[in-house]
Image 1: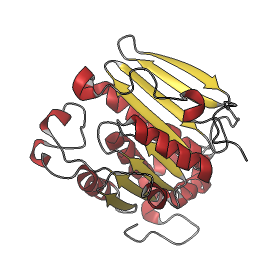
Image 2: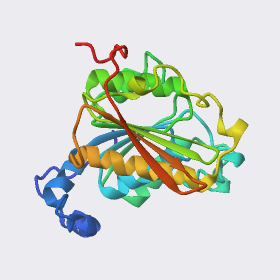
Image 3: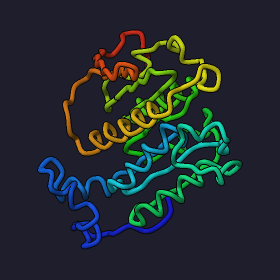
Length: 256
């Protein structure tokens, strides 16, 4: 990770001013804000989901953010990947998003990794993370990230969006995981936005919610149970549906 962070066990004056509205919340306060400062997060995918997710992590004071994406900005990304500008076409998404995070909050340590993840690289890239937001559009990457997070007991939020349908899977440490819910690639998951289309604002909604759920996990807020959580969003009707699911006996990742 790059950049140095405050080392004291109290918030600096600049932090108190920057996070003042968040500090007013009794569920957070100074102790929670210090906890966010100590949190190390990895965002896999810096497009429509990862852009708003990473920006909210940095804005909220998550201390270390590592951004992973091998791709360059393309013109047909821009209707939904609002962290980028027309002049960014042809440039690496991870590096551009890292620049935006540093400008937004110089108190946060940010690192960009312009590379795809595979079975060899994923372990070192996720090493030391307290929280992972899986924001890619690749089903195989989602399963790979889930496997590493389950084994390392790392909090994980998996997001997806296509057409007018958004989806979020929240995996707390030692809780039911993405593979417990989808033992194989879920129906429609292999279809890309390029092939099927996607409504731009929907992607921002899901990405922002990934940051919300991820920061709640980092803060220890919300319920704690061995169940996983699935949130489905119907953007045409603006309706959420929440389901919980248990650890699957045939998942295999949860065996001691």
